[in-house]
Length: 166
Image (cartoon, rainbow, N blue to C red):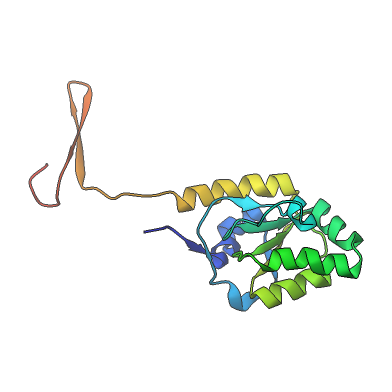
């Protein structure tokens, strides 16, 4: 089974203290699932020079992405946003405390995607969210066992519950 967490988890108090995320649009879509610890800055993909965005990654809009999108003429902006619309994302995050441009709000609405904001720099935010997601999405296994010390050597006995390991 693939691990996943809802976007709403990123807004919980203990996580919010590290990521400093606030929702600015799309509260009704906070149940969207995050399934990978990898994030993506759309960068050159906005220009259409590279292929497609990776599906199901959080999209980060830093100063460079917002600045580039704001510099485009209307028809160029439509083309860039069309590239973003083709790939699903659990949420969009605007970094550095920037004001999200209206076209990003509209994109989030069309895509039914939460739009979040953080005052953190892009690199610091990426570092923190990646660590958090890697920890939360790591595969886990539950086993029954007893660890015993025999003359300073640790021995782990594993087996079904109730079969007499202790």
